[in-house]
Structures are given as C-alpha cells and as structure tokens.
Length: 76
Image (tube, rainbow, N blue to C red; front, side, top):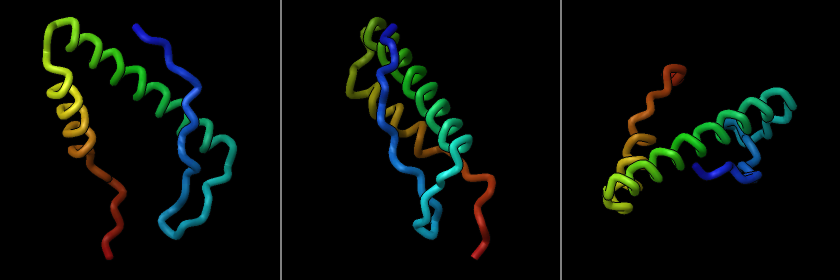
C-alpha cells in the first residue's frame, strides 16, 4: 500500500467563482480527497497485482467518477 503524499489540492471555489475560505470546510475537503486518493491508489494496486490492465483500471476509475450524482443540483 502506498502512503498518501501531501497533495496540494485545488483552491476550492463556488459556482460564482468566489473562494471557499472557511478553514473547517477546506480541512474537510482536504481530508476527503486524501481518503479518495488513497482508496483509488489501493484499488489500482490491487488490480495490477491481479494482472488487470493498468489502462483498463484507470478508465474504470475515471468512469466511476463520471457516475457520481449531485443530489443538491439546483434547478435553473
């Protein structure tokens, strides 16, 4: 298992372009993305150890992200 590095995640912004500056919100986002990265890394490594194609693993992970649903989507 690979240890997470200190990834510099993006500066989080709202739909109107303003920066999300609340320290607690940024901390939660950082923790969430660190966890997601580690889980995805573990899944990639497991797949590779089971001789799954690296290309297929990466494509499957991208597809997984594309299936995420926004339950808070605003109706325009």
